[in-house]
Length: 151
Image 1 (cartoon, one colour):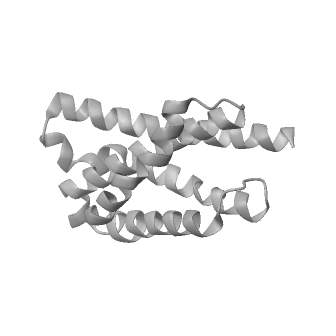
Image 2 (cartoon, rainbow, N blue to C red):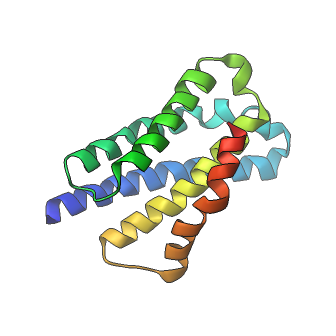
């Protein structure tokens, strides 16, 4: 329905804004401070990252109640894996928070999510920009294995 489409658009917009802020912040910090920015990535953007990942749990609900036609198992696995890595491994262990791999992992996750939520927002309005569509479905091919290696 039209109302659900607007709701999903607003959801995708909120996620896009959060992940864009994280991604932009990481890039600017790296360009400004260089390698020194990698060690305190979690301290700089961890709160927004945790909020975005908690909000992503709604995607499972969207699929279960039928307002999103995505496949449940891939989304469930991705969201569960991110929640476990972020909250159980990174957030709960201070010695892990300063590792460079946290920055790499956050960079990969946010790059994928900025593209995905941009694609979703446009698709909900009936706009299919071919390069973005290609990027949305192709970027995951190299980046998912890289994020698995980073974990």
